[in-house]
Image (cartoon, rainbow, N blue to C red; front, side, top):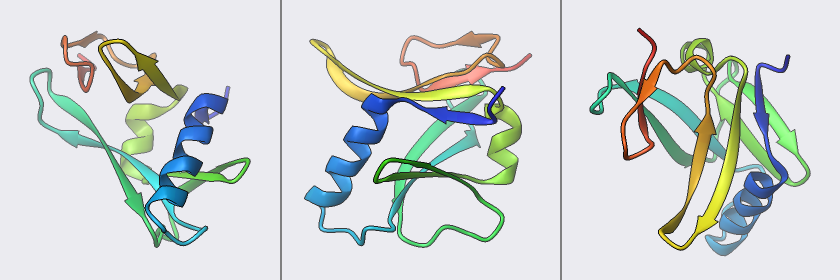
Length: 111
C-alpha cells in the first residue's frame, strides 16, 4: 500500500492552480493534519514553494504534493482527490485511519 496517493483529478487541479497563480513550477500542494476542528483533527491544504528535506514528495505528472512526517502518520494509506460537485469544488482526503468525520468533511478523529 502506498503511503499517500494522489488521484489524476487532484493532480490536474493542482497543476491548474499553480499555473493560474503564477507560482514556480516546483511549487507543491502541502497536505497537513492539524489538531483542531470539530472532530479532533483537521486537514490543511496550502501551496508551498519550498518543501522541507524530510517531506514525502509525491510527483503525479506536473503536479507535486508534499506531506510532513508527523501528518503522514495520520494519512498513511490515504488518497487525495478533487471533487467538483453542485455543492462546491474541493480537495478531499479519503482516509482509512479516520474513525469518524464531521459533516464539513475537513475534520476527523482516529479514536
